[in-house]
Image 1 (tube, one colour):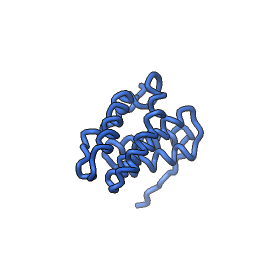
Image 2: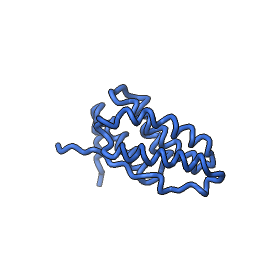
Image 3: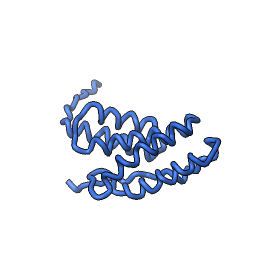
Image 4: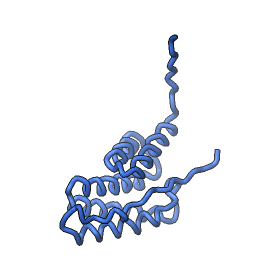
Length: 137
């Protein structure tokens, strides 16, 4: 029996949505490096209106990854850099419904990182699952 595999050509928007969705899944599973990779591919390969939001999500992901990689200074720096980017999307964004909660949690994570000496002391309650805005089709 032969299995016929069809390569379905996705539209540019479908490719972008797929990368964003994969980043959300990875982030929510605490696979922060993978989340960063998906979002970085989206950010570098395509031009779109809310690139700054994606850049902020990349920085959040790498910040959390730095904690797992024993780099508290790197985490602190990226949490600091991502906040102004994400704050620009508090009133309006079409991707993350709990962006306000994300910003609050990142501020807590940043404060935690500033006040610990060992990565094992990081409080992982200062990470959340992102809630994606879904539109009925």
